[in-house]
Image (cartoon, rainbow over all chains, first blue to last red; front, side):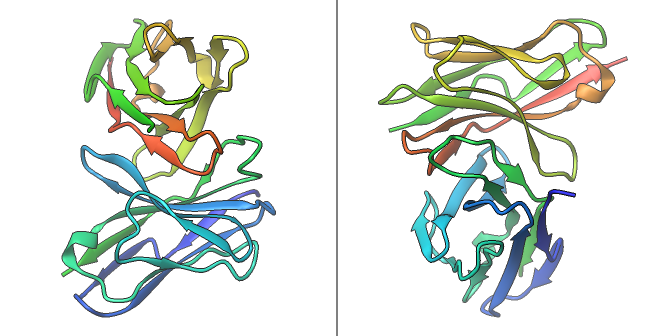
Length: 114
Length: 113
């Protein structure tokens, strides 16, 4: 089954404790992206990747890091999480950015930073 | 710069009546526009997309949207609401290179029996 898989689905942690949210897709997609969803704000793009080893900032990249060492994986790293990063996070992928393909979304990761 | 405004945060309709979810966009270029739906505790699913072909776009589950350049609008409609349509809907515009995506704040659709 074609899917985007995020782990963990839920996480409660404390300020300053490094964490990684994994994202994996099995569709051989070139483009991957991370979003955060906050009430009343819709989804905002954090980082995106056009292909392996190619990443770039979205609208709200502060406090986040990403890497794209393999085509299928695109982890989101919070080096020193803070309470304002409490949010619902989505990973998405699409076949290719240049062809305007629709994005496929994971089921989300709910992070609570205390 | 690109941006999207969804004019209603909540819309409530009765089952079997028409649905109208409103979206206005701002774009420096000819935009690509999308509507996504999010059911509770789920990721987003594409309903339809506009990419400068026909201005009336048909999507899944009976939804359609009309691109009106003069009004900078891309409203989502459905002739007859079903209970399963209850969800949150997002209007999205992409930048010209399709790298960055800008979401509206969402419209929650409630369908009453």
